Length: 151
Length: 200
Image (cartoon, rainbow over all chains, first blue to last red):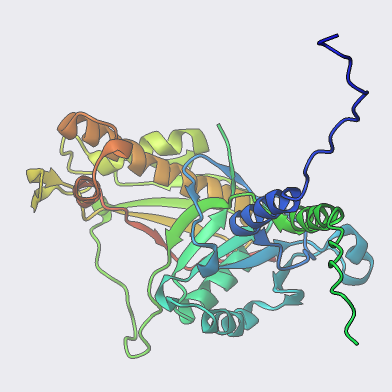
């Protein structure tokens, strides 16, 4: 018989040797487009909502200042009054100057430094104004009030 | 005596995929992709220590005061009228003030300015909007005021863009936007906050 039934073949195994490469590609993509979360937040804040916002580009030029009450698990020790967080710790407004200087060190184009202020809606302006005064003194004049989009 | 060369057994690479998956997940967890947005502002240069008093003489018709008290209430004042205002009317008030369409004597003075691409223009570029806050003002209110003022400028520039170039601002070239900014320069001044009595 011409069409002799062949012996039953097993399913050929798929070649998966390029699978790691594939996943590595995705990995590299993510490493490119995302930024490391640099600090653990010690203050909690809800930023105000606005309509005339601009995107913050060039992450390498941006330094963040967080303002708000301590997070829930730290409230027992730190109380609930407004705090300023620089890097990983609480700080006073006058320490912003050193912070700016330290941040500038690693920057390529120091004149284009942007300070992003992430402050809670309920913060009293006194804290913000103190920070702004120090920023002016340290010649960090480009600032950005972090906000979420509102329609 | 040398043995006959054995064939090197292939390394089992099945788990490489798993390892790279782990790396991928690690990066997904530790990084953030959210784009940061915000209202960009420029602070004035630090005061010159040699200069004792940096007060400038600005004609009162050129100033629009926006004061925000500790309760978050607005006081809007210009030569025309003054009184408590609402955040919703601030944008309109600011627009009318900056534009001064009828060249009223109580709103900012107009003079001729030569702007590239626009030619001879009759502009109010000497106006100042002064935002004053109290130390107790809620940040949100201050932010909303800033937002409304920037919105007023953006709307004015957009209207001008449609009128002069026939397109909205986002479709214009850099030079054209520069011309619009020269026509409506953003003069928002922030006075040092006052402490109007009471505790902080």
